[in-house]
Image 1 (cartoon, rainbow, N blue to C red):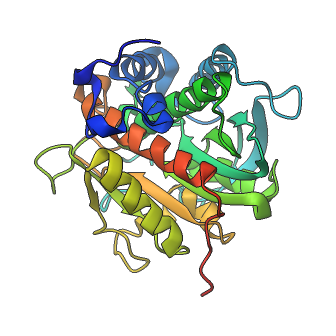
Image 2: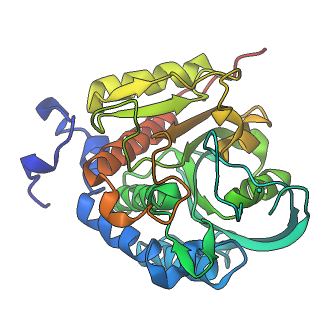
Image 3: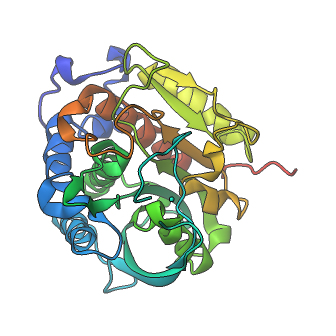
Length: 342
């Protein structure tokens, strides 16, 4: 076994060394996150607009990563869930989006062809129950010959999901796989109106009634204007459908990471409406408990300047580990997450 190097630990106590979950969380490291993001947010992937060449290239890169880490194709022969749908209006996360090429989608219907890329890691004794981890890998594409790289939105979430899948696969190969199954699903079509995640929940590959929770990752690599450093993450939705999930999330963070869990946007009445504006919402609509991990918008949001060199990789590593440890606890505890009746 590799020696654990102390400087790689962020928020993990020495007393946690003997725990398997901590050991596997440490496989999520800055060098791998940076390697994947440098490729996915490069000019060569042309901004990853759904239906365009760059999105297909990104899907292929993610699929090959799943193959390389040993994830078998789901249902025997597939990694893609392909969809063809008509887009509605664009959903933007900023308060006052002034990018002219975006308002063009309002009021129009356009046929979109995309792919969700799936890594299904079968559980052991509770394998029929599923924890779904999502991140959208599409972005805005090229406009007026300018590439919108989308390093934070949502390259950061995509590479986190890829590394989380790898951590679970390492555990599985060592005989410590999760009790419940893990579905890591990178979706496209988010920037066109949450299309990929909606297609999945309308056409689920695994029964929605067996889905225990959805952890959705959308922008976790930057610092917004409300914070001086990256030692925080916004959590949205954790207590909307399940106080059980909320309490578990709090306990995992307190025990292992110790970052600031900021709930200022955690309200259905929040004027930004963040709860409704990323892929977790399609699961929440189906009464599946969710957590949305988010760093808030910043000056480069939906601009050509959302590039890799501005990513805080220490933060990206820390929050990725938090999400893995939270998923691990959901997947391995005896009781299924309790859904509150409202």
